[in-house]
Length: 448
Image (cartoon, rainbow, N blue to C red):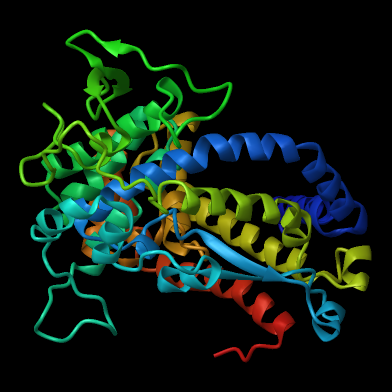
């Protein structure tokens, strides 16, 4: 055994022990529980800032892209949980979590809209129903719509729209990285840049309004500022936000629905918006504006304290006492070994193809390949499914465009991609299967 390999194995074993102590041991789980208690109030405060912004901004996609509520991310990022049975507990199951997707969301919050027509009739004033629904195009839903009576979006483009706000406003806090990924993906998938720009600006405006202008049913007490009147229209509020080009712009807004569905000068695309009167288009009782949001906040609050058992799940008493016996620790170590293998292969490729690169620049290319592995290998898929649905040429073009826009040499990137594409899919499959099989074994679910 070489000295370098021995050092790597010792370091990997040290990291496994540290991971086990922090996450999977008895003291580790207790520490996680205490931390959850300590940050409980902070989590609720953070949720009151993030959830309304995500919720109200994605509602704007309902009419623009004719997408039903249960399909939208992150509105459908919900799950139900239960305590384990005795048999499950003996296998190390601390909590059983089931993610709800699409129409399953109605199992958790029944009585809300499952299609666009129902959404309009439940939330908008009755006199607007005919005009709005008359402009929508029949969109198909697999297993529901009749063949030949509706059209279907390409799956990957639909995922791009569904995950737009999730991936771009949550994943990239830095404007430059966010914009670069949006553009790279839109160009790869053939999505109109004009539509992308409008969608981005609309969402940025709605999310800024949450704290910049206190609107009824859409503000946070002691955080949101009182609305300032707009210079050009004293009866309208002034909303300031950062647009798709990084400019700070302001608009005159009279209602929340104006921002979500109305035509706004220099932002909206013709035929993708509605000309409304000053009166709010929402009915007095609009469940998706108030009750739905309140219910989501309640569900978040009720689930906050299952963080500790969720992080320390699938660990028996014996496994909690010795990291050598812990299956999850073993799986984590194998995943880390895969990561080190990928990094070593990329470093070797760079040594041959670009030997003049310094350590800092080499690490950029390693990070780019690790991103390719991470985005296509995420098991939870929330915000990442679009990458997994891309055809290989689409994934390649998106990756090259994004990282070359971040300053990396496209020629080197192309050589890296051609080298790693032969073995990367296999590593992605292994990465997904490792964690999935642990869960299925502990819950007694047959492994296909």
